[in-house]
Every structure is written in structure tokens, then in C-alpha cells.
Length: 360
Image 1 (cartoon, rainbow, N blue to C red):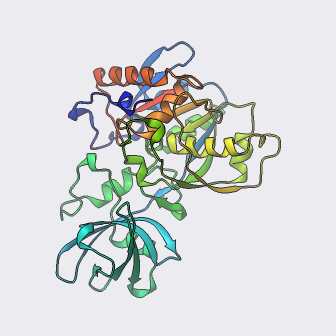
Image 2 (tube, rainbow, N blue to C red):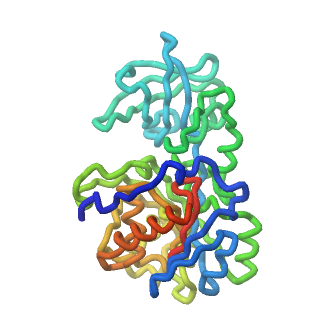
Image 3 (cartoon, rainbow, N blue to C red):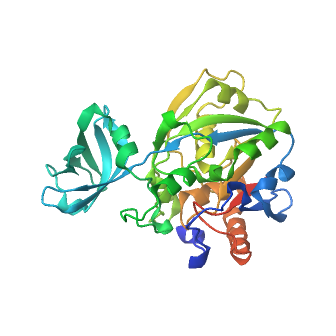
């Protein structure tokens, strides 16, 4: 499949730079796979479009305040984006700006808070960095103190400005059910941003249940495919953990399974493909790494409904959603492009802070 098939027209004004004032007040486009019918609603009314007694599976990863601004010894600015720890708590894989001016051996930091040394660099431009944090704090504790959430570039926020409202994005670029002890995500699992405690209570009162898993969302989420053929693209790998209670719910064939977002679906699908017979005997818990790349005409076997946002062109997330729309068939991309065209015409907002879609 040509990656150009995942292109679509999106006016600049349809890119959401701020969320809805109330999380569940955003628009909801409902697509019914059996008939192709499309309904326009609001997220607060999602219960009206679900089958009874669903099991919801959601990614409870909290967003790491991974963007840290620092200085070189010469006074030059440095932007350090934490990706993953590599060796204990003081060495991390990072993206650095300006990367070419920070060779192996270069140092940067902030007076009285930390110093950092570049230990190695890879072919993709990532750096291994060792941190020496004052007061014996961990790098995660440092990021909580001085870091900012790594907003995607299309949100276009000047996070270095003294006028930047750090607390606003700390609050809204995070799901209400995020687990603070699992601050492992370089990006928010954005389909979950639309849920509120009140909506959760309403859904629970109707017989729906919620189960958590943790997928460590990486920056690969934002990277478009740069290969001409989808099949030639090498997808990024992401760690996930699924507790025993969630696995048991995934194995329950009597209740419809709703994946809250592509990150949840990726973890679920990776596990189910690796453990085809797990419904007979679910393991106690699992920790694994997903490098699964789902694109049409692959078949989705782990979920019966999907809640998702509207994604970037040529993204692996579009491939995953297209596969869900037409599971096991090739026509999902064409349908998805048509859905996106309708969403643009109906003035839906796109991307992380944008509106939502339910596929049933």
C-alpha cells in the first residue's frame, strides 16, 4: 500500500490548540461498521451508541514532564527531551536541541539543579545522557520540578515563555484516570482526555466496567511514515504492562471490549496475537514490548469497539484505525479518508486536543 493513500486535506483552523472547556463537551463522530452509518453527537452522550455491558480498556500512563530547558557552559540554550531510561535512574535516551552542537562529552545543566553529560549518540540523532541531579533526586523528580509536558509541535505553544501557563497543560494534557506512579508516557493517550469522573460514573451505572493497562507512549506516535510503501516502514517499539484483572476482562467473551484509544488497542492486539489461546487460561500479569505494526488488510482480534481521535496524515495510527474499520479487508483506508473529509466539513477539531470518534 502506498503511504500517500494516508494523505488528506486539513485546514489549519481545524487543528485544535486548546481542548474543550469541559472534556466531554467535544464532538463525537460515531461510525457503525455494519451499515456505514455516521452519527454526529457529543462525547458526553457516548453511552447512547454503545452495546450494553461493555468492558472499557484504557491506558493509565501518566505524561512525563519530559521537556527540560537548560544551558551549555557557554550560555547557549539547550532543550532536552527525555525518552526512556537506559541504565538505572540517571542515564536516559534523549533528544537534544541543538543536537549537532552537543557532541559526545558535551555538558549542559541548570545552576543548583543538575548537570548532564552526553555519553553517546545513535544514527537516529538520539543521545544517551547521564544526569547528576542535586539533592539526590531522580531524573523523574527533576522533570516534575522543572520540566514541561512534551506538547506536539502542532499545538504551537511557546513553553519557554515566562507567560506560558504550565499548569493548564499539566491538567488538560493528562487523562483524569492517569496513575501518577506510572509517569512513563512521552505523549498523552489522547482518546482518554475526553472522559470525566461524572461520565465514568454514568457509564458504570449503566453496567459498563473499566480496566487499566499501561503502554509507555513514545514519540514515534507523532512521526509520519517517510517510506513510499507502508509495508517498508519500521515502527517504533513501546513497553506495556497488563495486570491480571485486565487480562481476565479481555478474556471475557460475554462482554463487548472497547479500546479507549490506539495506545490501548496496540497493547491489547500485541498481547492477543502473541497469546492466541489466552482466553482459556489468562496469565497472572504480563509485561512486554510491542513493535507490532497493524495496517490493512490485517485483522483486529482484540477489541469490538474503538474510541479514537483524528490522527496525523501518513501516521501508523491511521493504519491501525483503518484496519479496525474494515478488519481483515483492504477498504478501511478509503472509508477513513471519507470519514475525515466529513469531519472537516462538519468542523470537527483534529489531533491531540481535538474531537473524538467512536467506531462500533
